[in-house]
Amino acid sequence: MGLHRDPSKLYGIPPDENELRRRLFYTVLELDLQYCLNAGMQPTLRIGDWDTALPTVIKEARTCCADSSRQPLPDDAVSIQDRMLSSFNTRVKIACSVNAIVPENNYDKVLDLSNQLSKSFHGLEKESRNCQTEALKFLHNRYLLTLHIPFAIDSDPKYAYSQNVSLTSALSILEQITSLVPATPEQRQHRASSARNSPDDSRNGRTSNNNHSNRVDNICTTALHASGMLFKNAGLYAALYLCHELIRDEHDGTLPPGPSHVPNPIGTTPHHPPLMPTPSYNRTPNLVRTLPSVSHRVVVLIERFVKVAEERLRTTQFAGKAFLIPRMVLAYHRISTDLEVRTPEEKERRLLEAGKVIGEICFSIFCSNPDVAKVL
Image (cartoon, rainbow, N blue to C red):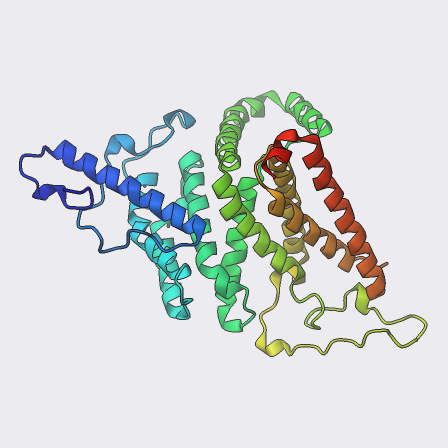
């Protein structure tokens, strides 16, 4: 009998073997769900295709990295296995919804799935920071972004909730993936000097916490860096959404005039007529462009993501799009907000120059790495 059938219907099978069958089948389900989410496909196995129960979580398996925390988990703590199992059916429904041939247009259903997913991950922010909470945080934000982004890119006010959720999730994903951007020698020297000059009474209390936090950062972020699928399908997805928001509404009149819309100081007729403003009553405000603090945070995270993409590009890890697109968007954003760029012609010239520089960087990487050239 296949693993998808209830093992309790088999006669003479010990309980341990029944549980082993359930765990094996659940592993198959999770791998299938992850692959389909990455590939944009419907899950091969959907709810109703099996009658076996999901595995149980034993108390001894409530942590995935015992050495990361010297304190045992309390009895009422929710483990990564608990949250994965409780959210599994919801995550399958999300994958079926977003990868359907006919796009989901029932927004109430989307909100219901979002609420169900959040219930499974409720209280995660209050738990102690370790590898499993970071992994769950990443998983939660990835599914939220996947679910809401089709509606978030629409400027309809009724989808404002999806825009807020997508922005928060994308920022969180990039903060996790890019949290270990290599520090410069000056930064490392400054950190070492600060540690030496700290008071003795506070140093003892902070050293262990800082070491534990740094160890969690190293383990989790290294895992995210090493996974090409997570970087490509979650990190790039989040970066592209932030890029979209960074340059959205650039010239539609819903925001203050950009550099290319500054009135001509000598009063001559502009070469291009001004664009008609779009009525603001039927559009949601772009938080990335209207709030300077959010805009600065987005730019910093995209810059860090580009650095990680360049590192991957130098090691034949196929990060060309992840490097080219966000870096070109950053160039477009900086040129568009440069007060010295006053005409469309000047803006176009600057953009062509930026594109040439970025293209030369990629070409030099390809030429200097023979392994990259072999796979092109």
